[in-house]
Length: 292
View (cartoon, rainbow, N blue to C red):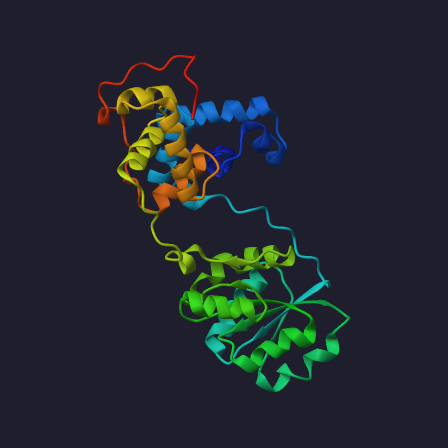
């Protein structure tokens, strides 16, 4: 069981950040980061960063990253304008907003153009558009509001792209509103664009790796060094380095951690991380062996 801080350290590690960058982001000492990483390794039963990334992916630890801290709403400063034609959906959104202490008003088609426009300059607006029609996007324009689009059914990539093109800062399915709307509104107020990962799950084809690149990828997952990989594959260290460079380019990665995360998400590695048994006759690693 990893603590919240350990999950943050693991998540940042998998994003390619080194110990000092993690320390700066979390505002803790570098030695504290190293202590967290040692505890993570012990809990996951691994001995290297590459193996920790592999195990974290296999255990779905990176899909449950802690949410960023939510800033408290400032009474009287923000008004959430909910536009909908469905009373059931309006009730779901209203209950969620009331539960997190946000001021709101629900408007219909008749009010969209004139009545709320008179409030401009008095409050800071955020518009929540439930199943918006093309004409409904005029409401946030009139109010100068940031917009959250809430479709009743999970949207496809085309629908998400269309909403963003019309000015939406976030796209959130109605079924996710009770759990995520307030956090999404906080992110939107900080100029973030938010959309669920499932909406873009098939956005890129699987990278095509050569057999040699797959062998080097498995070696990275095992935490092997360049020298060890060269011995096991019977090739020169320079060949391993050039193969690794091509592999990183295909995976869109800057380092081993990012390469492993992207490879697992692309289905290039099995869900269960590889072990040393995959290559039983491996020479031992020495302190002189340079890491990948």
